View 1 (cartoon, one colour):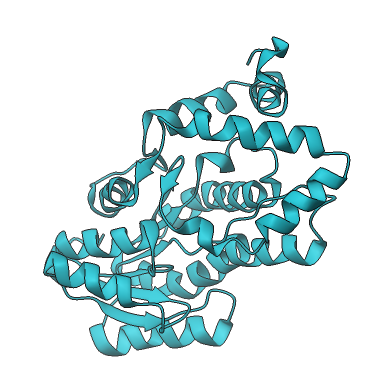
View 2: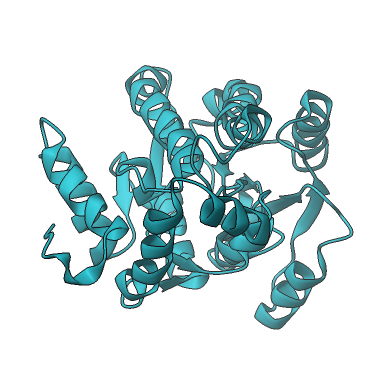
Length: 295
């Protein structure tokens, strides 16, 4: 962040704040002293955001921003500069989920996920970077532990997060040369309404899976998943604390896990040179519990 800006004068733009971690991050950043521009794709879906801000006793500048629309991105950022005179940080949080596997999704569904989770992040970041260079600012992206470890039947979502996190990892050293700090926050499972934004009909997906060659694997996955994540789920507010850390720490790391689960999950991948360990872990999600297959 710029050395001559106090917390009360720093402006952060956060995408995807209508619910979940984005909503919590907007409120937490405002409580930390930032001027928060909380953006949403649909201004008709801001009731929860406004109620949370009111309950916390903070003010938010709520604006429309659709990460898939270049004109929307430009309008939001130019509006921030016109109103607040500066942009000190961006938090890329907007995203969509995807449940399915390659034969059960069409390519348009996969492309849409990449458009939001990858190209949308790049579009917002690219538009913001000149202003972040001017302020010596921060570029923070909310990724996922599943961007490190590919999760069965979640391939498109994992691919988008992996592409984004790798891009940001490569960008971080370049951005640092011009005074911009880049970080990626990696949550594990979050208890939020994020699943409501998945562009897949779960009933239709189940029917397709049960009628096809993935019937057994998908059924085992649905049985195994709740138990696997039961002790790992975080609240959105807990994840938001790490977003604020990325915005305020004097020298934040590039990769920031938000829980023991995500730290362990990411660590498994980073030491798995040939991929066999991760394959063993994820394969157990697709087989009956009594087969004796171990992670």
